[in-house]
Length: 401
Image 1 (spheres, one colour):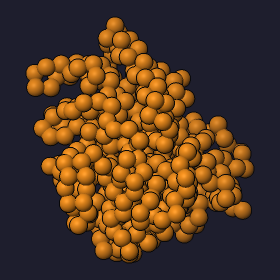
Image 2 (cartoon, helix red, strand yellow):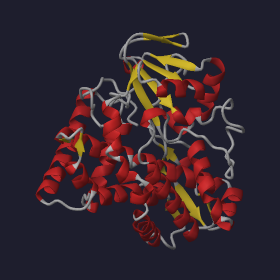
Image 3 (cartoon, helix red, strand yellow):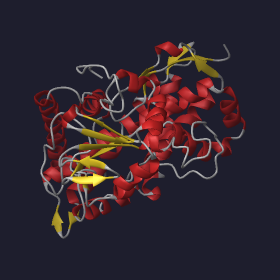
């Protein structure tokens, strides 16, 4: 969060999802809006709507006639890439292009494809925690969560693992620096584009068994993918597959650090982990997506104008008491859990099998190494702003305080 905008004084008429108050604790904001103004509006970013109730978020997410996914990150500018594919297909594309672009990726993210990555992930998580063994305080975000998805995605794409810091910078530029001037954002994208071009050229010269080569050989409707399509999809996997997952891992550790009863239960009953993961995803869903209004359109009494943004805060939908029982509590053995952490509609997260595996393995390994831990300093925890919310600094006191 770079803080170029004036602070928000009224969330119903002038909200800003990049405001530090939202980053630190959005829950009271959502509760307040749900009561007095379920769909807020702001003139920032050239006009944005913010539905808060599950029902409205779902209705817009499923409505591809009135809302386009051509751009899913709210910024001052409007889409940089033309339809049908947009800048990062399939997430930035609409039907019918979207269906084919998504379908060709499904095999790469099926449970069968993700299974073999689990031992690699587990061994890397162990390596990270072996490196901090004996330290009284470990930053669970900086020393652990942030590294895991970066390494896994690099491994899947066949990119050099030593480029991890560059990936983190790309993610920051794309998702957190949304209030920077458009020119700066275009420069940042050019850096990412240059990096990806070099990787693609290397893969064309030296094909290997990885996701990049898979995309370079893939066909859609009998035609090879365009270089822009391949580059955009890789950019999507890098950006969407990293920040989201490390945010979920970090938020889960943050929760367990403050709820010893949940933590002890997971240590004692490891079979609970799959249910616990779904509940932690519901309660601390990291991702808010966006759509653009295609044409002037009235939605539930809101006069939406062409090219205005609509934010889809899946985390707020997941806390809607109309949709979930005990919506604001974490019930780690919640059995019925139709949460929206992976989104709703045609763009539901393609990498959910991968994200679930990484989150489960990261928590299992953490609890094996550190069955007892607490927050070292609650005031030192920093959350990222923008459309992916997760802890960026998370000092954890190891052992029983």
